[in-house]
Image (tube, rainbow, N blue to C red):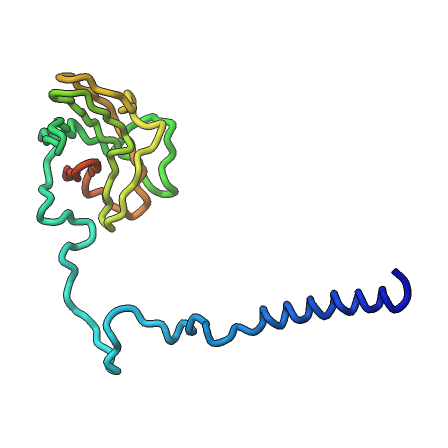
Length: 187
């Protein structure tokens, strides 16, 4: 292309690009309102109120529908299997797991027994609930022998330790099993 044709094609491309940008810049009236105009919940009344009622369940406390069990207490799950917190160790000794900065490690010895049919038990079903209500996941490299993911045959049990990190300034409250139901043991 030479001369006027090239200049016309360039101008046409430039004009289309500018028109496209103009269309992008024009948001029209179909926009999301600014954040200050957003409101969630009942319509505001114009006056501000502050609720002083405590939550139904305090942080770090299981609901009243969830009983708290003790070390050595056997608990039947919703599937009919039996779990037990056999022991709780606040000083698991020499392990390869690393505690959180300034924190500690704790270990729980748990046993899972299958009843009429085979069942799976694994460390990931257990967590450690702290005084803040935060739950810590199990860690690798903890006290030996560890609880490993396994299928437990009927009328047999699996036993092992599950280790958790406890951040500095936090207090462990419960060992929690979470599957088809939730079970709490006080630690």
